[in-house]
Image (tube, rainbow, N blue to C red; front, top):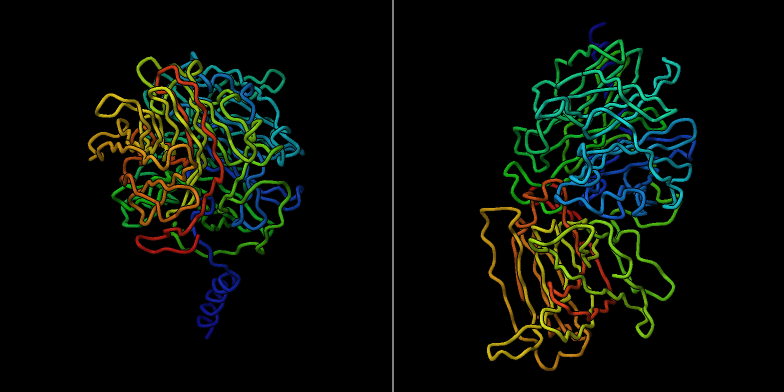
Amino acid sequence: MQRLFYLATVLLFHLIPALGHTNYNNPIIPGWHSDPSCTFIPEWDDTFFCTTSTFLAFPGIPIYASKDLINWKLVSHALSRPAQAPLLLNATGQSEGIYASTLRFHEGTLYLTTALISSAIGSGSEFLVFTTTNPYADFAWSDPITITTTLSGYDPDLFWDDDNDGQLYLTIAGYNHSTTPLIFQSPVDVSSWSATSWTYLWNGTENVWPEGPHIYRKDGLYYLLIAEGGTGTSHAVSIARSTSIAGPYESYVGNPILTNKNTTNYFQTVGHADLFQDQAGNWWSVALATRSGPAWETYPMGRETILTPGRWDHGAWPELTPVRGSMSGPLPKQTRQIQGTGPFATDGEKVDFAPGTSLPRTFQTWRPQQRSFFTVSPPGHPHTLRVAPSWANLTGNASFVPGRDGLAFLGRVQTSTLFEYSATVRFEPAAEGEEAGVSVFLTQDQHIDLGIVRLRDAAGKLSTHFRFRVEASGRSGLAVPETVVEAMPAAWRGRSIVLRITTSDDSSFVLSAALAGVPRSERVLGKASAQIVSGGSGQFTGTLLGVYTTSNGRRGTTPSYWSDWRYVPVAQEIDNGVYVDA
């Protein structure tokens, strides 16, 4: 009888939390939102804040706010002024730029530390610290402090040790005469913001790309959480602990505590996690994942932010629930009542470029670009976005130099498996090579474009054409569709034209054109595999949907005028072949 009572008590203990669980779907921040770091701030109206990596995209380092862990509002960017990170402009590699950040709250201030990776930096990287007491405004984020350090690396973490007079520590994935990173830590002298006394902490369980470190203090112990295995299908989250912040760290025998490697799950590459509690004391983890299945071939949205519930008992190791598309957990009460302006991560978009307005917070360029490229409602063209041509096209050429040669491209993150994106353009090219169009953009080496371009016809006469073409040099071995060039019908010339990008499945993009106001005139000009914009040179990024104007290396100066910018999320794939409304 006593044993039966014990078993009933254990069952009830596990059942009661489940009764309070709420179903939700991953990803919670869809589209390219990799390397998440989150923190819960009771002092700021019980609000959760998250950030993700942005590499070359600008503005960078988005700040999302939520009250319920499901509805995430884009409230600011920590990096919104080119002067905050001038070397980002000169970053050459498509995987350079702003790597993973860590977001932490300390004594009334929100701190964000990140690494800027650029071949323009002598050591290859620099560690930056941004601060704010108002995360709901771009302007309230400080110019960054650059930490003086004797070690290069990335994925920095800040930890204040309250048991050691509040000493601040910087923990990184660092290089010390090694070809792959190891986890190092140094105290930070905040009077000079220098970190020069490095201690080796851990190389993970396999010594394969240990990175993304975070330090936590719990129950008298220091816990070191890392990612390892590389950001592919072997990606995993592991943990170690110590009685001293400097180690030695004891690896958990149950590692990894979170991974989907060696499974057939739709969500793969699960890793680079962060842990935090909600107002009820429940433990949660955010991490990155790709919706690719184990084949890991088609995942145009790149690495996205997922949420999984956890449990961390006194003196025990944390336990995390394996990641799936459909999950449940003890979520806070659902609400969209969040401070600040800005769209939610899952919102669609309707932009009419009204006079007196600015570009939406969702719009991004590839590296910071000169403001003269983009003008909202210029004189004589109200309710349009004028895009002046860049000399370089989206790919550039052998003479392309970042910082000198701009890219007149403006895009937004693709956030839904199935979607409809369109923009209406008025463009009357005069000089040979002048072009304006729409693009599915991953990197300069991988993009899918549909443009209106001035070319010579078979008789050598200049005329206006549609051109569908694909740049896939960043991912070899793929079958790439041939370039399609069609003369624009004479009746369309000088009129507004709708350029559209859509998906009807998870594996391809369809690009089409139509006369504005005449839907039946739509003609499909190209279809391309989503593999073209998955991985390769964009292994860290995800697709942007947007518009561009270029002279294609010539002397053309004709701008394009865009209106009726529309992005409509249709459906999210949360398991292989399983869709829910977006």
